[in-house]
Image 1 (spheres, rainbow, N blue to C red):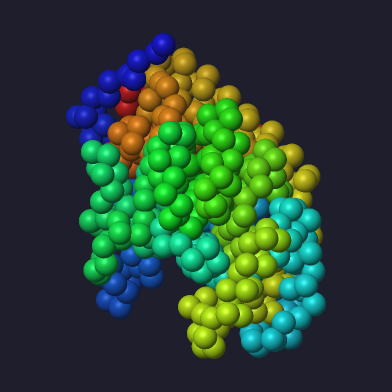
Image 2 (cartoon, rainbow, N blue to C red):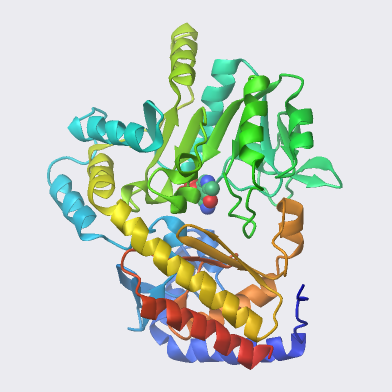
Length: 453
Ligand code: PMP
């Protein structure tokens, strides 16, 4: 087996300084905007995460179309980040742009349903095999609401997650295993409740630990991504999910699958592609083409119990729902997306290119003896700094290398290539071309030659 190739920190730092200077010189308009933004935007950006990219100051965009971005200084980029999945099917697909323009002139938000919502629910039921649906404004919200329903309909207190997971700003999941003990993540701001009282955490791919966590019958739901995609990438071992699903059934725990990233697997997500039958399913980000929206589905049994729980509860606010949810604009965008954009044909193109990317990166890694690995889940590809793919969140966490990542990201960005910040995730969309993919592989190789080889 190959070994992870040593990287000289001084050489890396020298490349970093050179690339930071090159970025600063090439982006005077972004720089001016950043200085203006510093006055009235906290951290100089509308959302503080936007200052966490690898760049010395935020890159400001002019526009985005298909697989391409144009920045405020007029540079063009091939976008493999695609809004961290929000634009997984390309920026502003024409069908969605048309639907938004048409609906935008005919009512945006009303607190009343229309025909698009009925059509969308029928289509979601057909795709995902779950018969009953509700909506939210973000995947974070959908996960929060699904957990609330799960607790309400089971009457149980505990939520179970896999160590190293991410499901959005859902406080329940910010629990890490530290030396085998659950601990509330200390980076959480303003959190004053001891989350470990109601959240359990076990390692992914560990069926014995899973059963031990479920066995007392106190767990309302297991919230999980079918494959972990937020701590690098961790795939389920063969048979893991079939066994995990059976354990959930045995102990009366609802299986809540978060397909927000693994929708890269196919039009019905990972669960449909692999014949799994979750009780609840969440999908956010790309479901309405980037218009803020998420959907969550219920099995017939879970839906009947959820409706009973609501009927039997005292009247008043359920703690579920927000005013702009499922409004007319969102539903029109989602319908256009499901009908015309998120199609089998789109996926077929994306699979071909993602495989080309994964193969290209693997060959490059082998040529230079880097000892990195590449993992692919449909249209989603990730490279990780280890020869053997991690089996769980702890292993994946140990191989994260933010300094190296940031160097790679900035190097690529200076060469017109954008990949997802915070880890090494690359998405292709229906507008990505084979030439774009080859450019990304070449850009990675140039970095390796400059920095490591
Ligand atoms: N679930 C998963 C699997 C995610 O990766 C994310 C975001 N990265 C979310 C939920 C939350 O999505 P949002 O930030 O749009 O609420």
